[in-house]
Image 1 (cartoon, rainbow, N blue to C red):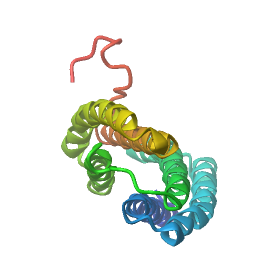
Image 2: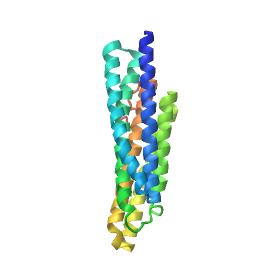
Image 3: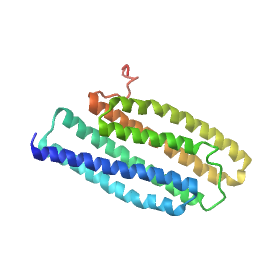
Image 4: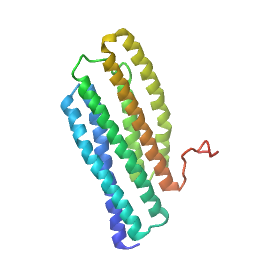
Length: 224
């Protein structure tokens, strides 16, 4: 391939890294805003989601332009296809982080609930690790690390179920904070969905490295 094509691919990789860093930071800050009851921090997350959306559109346009101009094949084609899919997952993670931040703003206005006892932060820490490792797997083209991320998703699902039970118990003990606990449950659901998107990114890394489409693997009778 030409020097221009390689430059375009390098530009695309850098764009993905920039978006990944922004999304990862927004998720971390959204959880911090809930923990610290910091409405200003939460608002910064919401404001930056606009940048996430713009970067997502730019990356999609770069991918489509690269496909049209250079007609890549083999690994280069898989990379662009994977980036298109990961780009969408990162944008959705950005939206979910903004949703968590929105709840953080409202939760900062009233009496605090026992988020930690319900397991929100433990689940968020696991989801943050999944996101980081899925992005590390992308940078290093590491299918084994991506496989670890996929396996971690079961842990997050289990923590989400445990959190639901914990919130239900505290709602009975503090019925006057019912709205707060409902918001807490929503935050937990958003974190669980972020873990799902991190898993999607990991699956796309495996596709990129090995050329294997592993979605619905069990239904297709595949052993992974």
